[in-house]
Length: 397
Image 1 (spheres, one colour):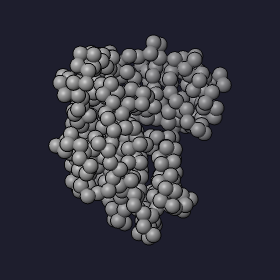
Image 2: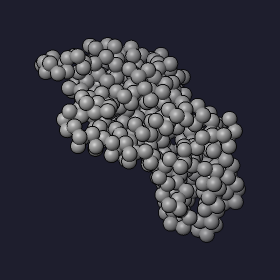
Image 3: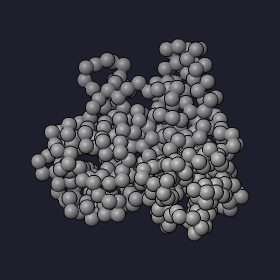
Image 4: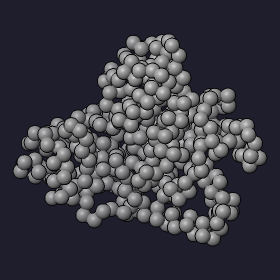
């Protein structure tokens, strides 16, 4: 497929006027269809009231279930292995409640040392909840040393929580290889796909991952604070005896309205659902998922490789003329569409890029600017605007 033949969906998004928006790795842009989707559910609420749970055009009772097929295609799973619910860290805690059950010998959680802070806070608090010292129980290791650290931890390792894509530099981790390494020492392989889903293909089922969590507001464009998602491999989802923190929405649908005191978990990942699904929040996510289904992740990834490669070449030219370096791996297979740049005064530069040139990226401590040429809506023109703006603000610094 040539770059000209890619079916860009840019016209289907609300693009802030005058901006070259390169921050889709933090918050994706709004699909125009999101407004229509929300208004449709508001109309159903007004028309049907409580009966919308059963009689709406897409009955709210199983609204979350109607999203599973699309989400499953983005993470390489079966629909029964995924659930759309809550937000990332809430889902992480719910799944750790089942999969992190430390013993005297096997109690450590491994996490890479530039993991997103919320993941670190979650695993530290889980260790403390079990009466352990997080300084001992949580192993933080450089991303390049993860496999060796897994082997060293050996029988003491209970869970490895790793990112599909490192949020800071955009590096892609080897999900199948590292999952195998974790299983080789008898531990649970868990994945944070916040920066993977909608960015590049992932094959959770085939990799044998035990569980994964993610958000839908970055590359999936589900809106600020959109409901997140989780994966539970079918070998665990079919184990109804697996301990979990239960709620009414995780109950077997055949048993749910009997209002019995015994919890009968639903088979699959939806057996970890707890609370009432937020239908109005699901609506824009559904509109976005329709776009992914229409374009297809393989075509999206192919275009992403070209677009990101274009920006990489332009950033290299800037780096040759100004003091700046690209910290994202150069191998296209080891990165998604994010390119991270290290330069002094990055925070101020990000502000100037937006104020003076309409180029929107994000800043991360200590000196990183992150640019994400999202293939659904970014263009080659956006890439050239980024390079020209960087040359200007760096030259005038």
